Image (cartoon, rainbow over all chains, first blue to last red; front, side, top):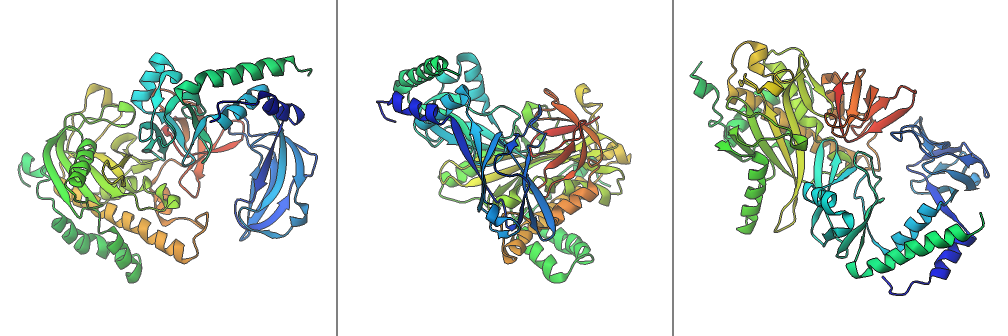
Length: 219
Length: 314
């Protein structure tokens, strides 16, 4: 983590293009049929339990078994690989891009994720802190909790199988918690962001600066 | 029939006795339904289950004993046989998930199966389905009717819980081997429950109206655990031979068997991560996904799939 942060450069980047470009890939092999066009608005998954699927983006048929793929983020379809319409695609092939407009909170999170050590979810599952960490967070707050490599900090729960997850990043304090108890987290999505204690003032400076700067900008 | 102490004793259990039972009772029954080559392969893959059996008169928790056993073996430079079973006639500080109390007096089967985590990621989700199937089949073999599995692996008889299972991961401290510790609690001859469990728990002796030979029932249960664990490994091999991939094509035979034994599909349920403390919503179960997830239809018509959490029937 660098001591010096070029705030103007970081903020300038987000001011000039306050979007995230989310590439969508084929989950498995099959014949693809697109269900949206470039410029279409798409809605993300919604509902209190995230049970209402997002806009259907495309359908892949494998062995006469069609499977619809839906949007997980809202935005506008900025690119469709329409030359693939009706053809056989491999798993992992890029099919389209969604341009997602970033909110202030998301921008802060993205900047923080560049400077914090992000500890990702090993599998799609539900996660919760171990009882010890949970009680310490309750008493003192997450930012008072120090973690180091090898610590058992989180339990991964999947099909009534609870597996301890061991922290393997930089030592520091838990600055950001990205999961909620009872809500599934995708594989690779961030679980916690950890910051070395001495860098906490710099992190706070980033948050304050982004908030102030963003609020001053004309809407 | 012997004395109560004899009937409730697991001390006669050993890996050799389990081998005898498996090859003289379980495998011949399976051979009547499947082809010999597959059955023999499944038997070979499953043979690890109960390859070592340790029976204690009393323990605090068998999961804790499994952890300390693995640790002690590693510290001596020794390894732990995957499939080892740790059993106790009674547990002093047993608990279920979320620190819920679990009454474990003499007469039940309380223990932990240690399995090294050698499963492929795609098949690991199927493992928790196995103990529910094995227990249900063992109960049916004793003539019990109405035994059914509630997702993920609770066994209910006449709506009351007869057996419960949980799996905890463990990373060994010396060699950092990953293990699944599969804890099990089967109410067999124990017939008195604490007040808070009287409405929700039952045992086989209460259902049958007589005591069962605990050792025989344990053999039947462990033989079926051995069969389905072998089947899980065998299916991995078959799937790899077909070219593998990101998904399991078709219906996994363990999932198919689970569906045949479960009364969950079609039920309206309360769902929650800890459903007793924090129920989240009610929905109707329409089926299981190919990886064992619960497919739920909400009142607004939308459908979601849950892979972790628990249910209670409405």
